[in-house]
Amino acid sequence: MTPQEKRRLTAKLDLRVMPIFIILYFVNLLDRIAVGSAAGYGLRKDLGITGTGYNIGISIFYIAYCAAEIPSNLLLKKIGAKTSYIHTGSQFIGVRVLLGLFEAELPMRMGLFIAAAGISTGAGAMLSTTYYGVGRITNEVTGWRNIFFITIITFGIAILSYFVIPHPPERCTMLTLKERKYILDRNKEATAGQATEERTKMHLVWRAFKNPSVWFTVWPWFVAQVLASSLSYFLPELLLEFGYSGREAQIHAGAPWFLAAGMSIIFGYLSHRTRHHFGFVLGCIGSGIFGFGLFGYAKDTQVRYAGLFFCATTVFVLKTAWCASNLAPYTTRATGTALSIAIGSSGGIVGAWVFIAAQAPTYYTGKAVTMTLLSFSFAMTIVHYYYCKWENKQRDLGRRDHRLVGLTEEEASVLGNLHPSFRLVT
Image 1: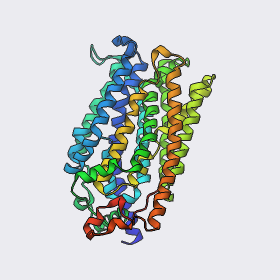
Image 2: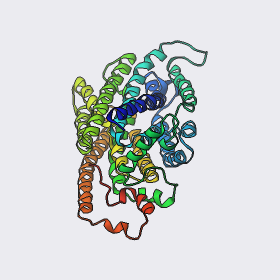
Image 3: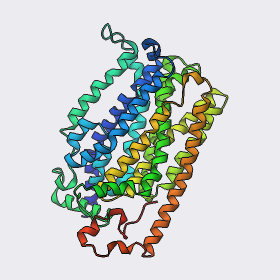
Image 4: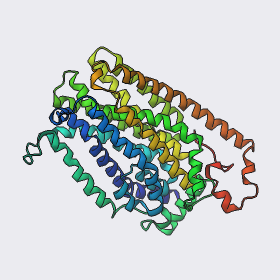
């Protein structure tokens, strides 16, 4: 393909694929964080929730969410994105289809995809003031209950998505034969010789569990989700302690997430241009350490609020893109990314217990645990970087060439990230 044709293809994919998944992820997050906004408007008081009842309710969601992550991604690979979205609601769907359509563009597209989460979280807090102000819908639905009507919108968009989500490139009717060949060739280059999807086999699934990059990426994602859940579900209430009214608290709770969305786009673009992840991931985690230090331990309320902007940047760290870039073939990537997200998302369970009402206003236990996890994540990211450098050097020296002995060309292509010619992205 000529450079002009490649640009047209990229534009086609961006306009046809990205919008639907950004919208899906946007409304998914709106639906998920609605309970945090409702809590800021009196949900606990009206429902008689005392003690740790609210924390338990949030934890239960994340337990079910994490348990479904890996099965949903393997199901998605088997039956396609159209059916899986409606039945699983997995956030990985957008990433999965984008991987198949344009492998090399992952970091930049991931940045756009994750930005939807930041915009959704910010908009959700601000839109709740509108829902709350609607007034009485029925005798039973009024006040904070109005906020949960976002679920109707989410369900409607999920059904609509069935008709517009494209198939993988080898079966995608919106692509010409020439465009399909080009994308499959690009995929082949990125996965050490494999262009199309292989059959799902358990040894390829198990390979993801043994991959060091998966486990290195789990911890930053885990800590990011600790921050995401604790701030999303508790921030509107915490800002009431700063002296804001209910409406002011919702608006102030939304603002930091818009900055985070912008930073995820910028970091995703720079990561794509430089084919580098380490510096951006480490910078995001460092921002979280600094921001949570301000929010958790500063005395002045304005300084504490400023810290939230640094914390929000950490929440959307592009660690999952780094993980996916170093996994192949498709089954291993789908499993490894799902495993990283599933275990990482269990941070939401921890986040549900960062702010316990009985420890207000100091929340000393949650603050100490969060700062410890952030510091550990910072260290693990550094170790991950040097592991990738070391492994690539071993391959340069020919110390992984023995993996090709006795294999046919087809068998060698399924080695994926274990292939001697595959280089880990740093």
